[in-house]
Length: 511
Image (cartoon, rainbow, N blue to C red):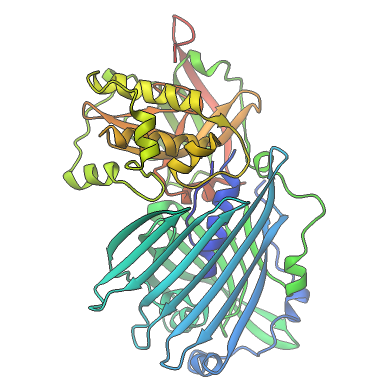
């Protein structure tokens, strides 16, 4: 599974977490350590109070390099350049490169982002360009520019030649929230803040609560320095990250949950990777304590996921949550409760996008054999089987758009889900991708996975084209829809334990 999004260190963070989500979503809580001796050589300016922050930044071009670690194994590097513009605005250019394996198949991800913020006092987000490339695939480019009135953000998305245009409300993100030095200056005056982050992968805006939780005295470059430990919480997406930053605004280290860490390093050290790349799939399997047996025989599963953030895996028609314990059912269409769908949500889940290009000739040709005279439930089932039979499962890099995936004829679970969503929308059925966990008997644990939901007869029916399931079995645990943020919050910090299962008396259920 691949997906993009998220937020850590104010500007660099969205890209690091996006890259992590992409590479990890295929399938040891260890405390992060701060090597002050190594960091001392990288922090040359003595710490300053909040008043001189702009004076230290304005004439300078500040460049920082970071090593990116997954479960304490080097997975790539990140680079951030902050430039002060003549009008007092800022330009922040960032790159992230990750090199991993997934079940021994190599995977490369490169993300670049350039964002400009206007002049003070607001320093509002004015424009951006984000490029995401996986291996040799064409990738996705997103560009945004404030309209002439300044009230709308005009966005163009290009996914390998398939384009989409959106007009969005002006984001509330500003450089005061997104640039570490300016944020630290605000925290010095008020240790608790509300900030906004515009996610340039999902094109959604998120409120975050930022708080100074500790002040530490360190010696950096021979100078006694105060370092802030800052916690950022995004309750809606179940994210929490901790950043260590000097009063001058130099980020030393950021951790996202227990499994993802970014550390300030010299450029050559940051770019140096281990001879053996970490295997993202093996690092992110959640072993299950207890014997589960054949998932096809399970009517109801109760599993404890200790450490799972309260903001993820909320209840829906198939699952409910009580503390750490999730109860998940295999629900046929008639067993699901009706859920009203607003006109806005119907439009959203029927929309043609650059990725789910439901109106493309190739997608329309793909669904042409589906009998429109059949009940919607049968159309959905037919599309699931058709996607499963058409695509070959592969961990190699794939095209971004549904039409491109169909042209290639292969992909992993993300590609299966994306084609399924586009095909259903082409038939007029509202559909959306689901990101979560599924039990893999071979690995005796849960792995990250993607499937879909189709809105049929006023109910959301979960279906899986990768595994050819209508409906999905009871081991599919939904973490969220399309936003991969919950995936990062699970990495390395969740333990799974079987509570109990209720099985079908008739044995394994048909797909």
